[in-house]
Image (cartoon, rainbow, N blue to C red; front, side, top):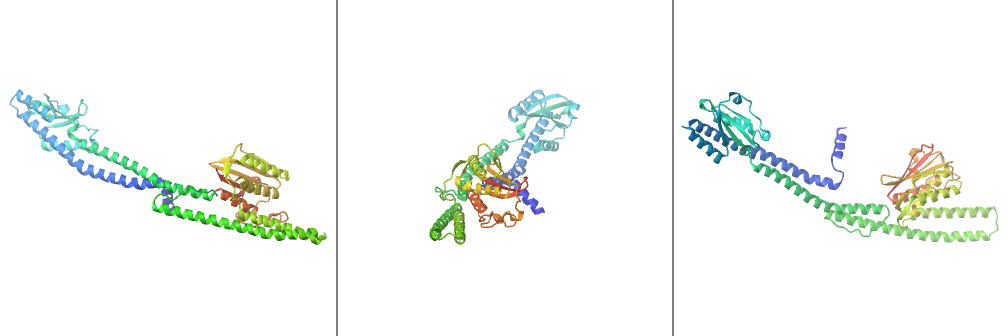
Length: 449
């Protein structure tokens, strides 16, 4: 049970196409590598660099605090303040002591909190200074304040820029990571498209061959493995073509050889005295001719007919009209326009076999045709005796007839459904049976558009 759930999750999470899976194989190591590099960078480089920056700023604040407290007069303080602004980019303001300000809770720097630099600065200032202090936010953008108590009831406010605690290398590093990932991924997409294209061409060629279409312009291209598969496909196509040609030639010879003696027999019977025995022989010869035609038609197929754009609605109208002329009771529900590429005569024969069976073994038939999800769907329902579920695949075998459930006197050679399935499969479609809501059997034909 667990393995089935795991397999189902894998099928849902993994991309369906080879292109998507190939990109995932390429992108996953790149992403993992960048995550590992980023972790090492922020865990090692950033921590070390930020500690040094914080340590330096804490030392400068401690030094300036000591100098301000030891300054002999006001001009000396002013010189210290000017030097700090000029050389250290730290603005200093001296004001009377504000006990409430020093008692505030230290501010959290939102832009730096992720790296915990404010905590490091608090720690280093505590180590380097003995005077009471507190860190607060500043009204000036990208700056913060450090309030330090001086001697004689005074308080110094050190206004420090945020950039003293950060480095531009961090943002450059992140940009390089993202940029390199985008460039590598774009290059991978271009190369993978070129590698997948021959596989898609091979799949299209195989699909066309399965539908009985010729693929004269197909050539092996791509990687060596794809070329090997393409050459094997071409060899298979040639073998199938030779087998079909040999079978057709053999059947043509068999047809000629068998028709000649049957014709002589019919002439001899025509000249012989007409009696019940000669009539029986004539019926036997006609039955042999019908059987021979059925066998040859099934074996030869309709592979030589050209594929063309056809309106399936017009075809079904002709088939239904012909069945009605033969006293078939048919009710139709057809979509207005059903354009599809197929071999018209072959498909017309396949559908005719199905509809004629419905009219033969039932009192009424219903024919529907519509387009659904890129497929042309033709359904033939009847109110006849139906076919048992365990026999619905068997009836498509050549020369098979259901003697019990169908009338043997009206039964044919058992080739109608076999021929229909052969033609439908040659077009890349499918034909199957199911229970009908009309009380009998439903035959469903699906053809790709």
